[in-house]
Image 1 (tube, rainbow, N blue to C red):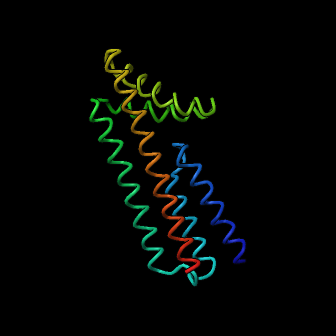
Image 2: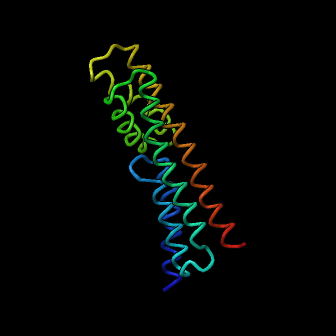
Length: 159
């Protein structure tokens, strides 16, 4: 039974790492859940309270930074909520077009969202770029945090 729980935790971690790129999945949260499930699989014998607390703290900081960073990025370029929603929709649609779709989708979606709001083309391009940069920067930050969480777990397991 412990092996099944451990494997479930590992699957959650892998899905979480994929979810950092896919805006549909809560990536860092899934990595956190996976790490806690892995620690639970041996009754927190190898990875105890303090490492789990650090992992939890990193996850919370990442989620808060993601929300604030996205808001700051779109506010900084004067983008509307429509641009942010458009960037998310563009990211999801971009999934079906491979790596190029993931790169271009948020920009096109952000610009389209801003155009739907009624902004001019110049503002739409600015909003698209802001949304694209916001998603790119927060995704990179989430990967750093996720791998830091995994490193804390691994170091705690073997030390």
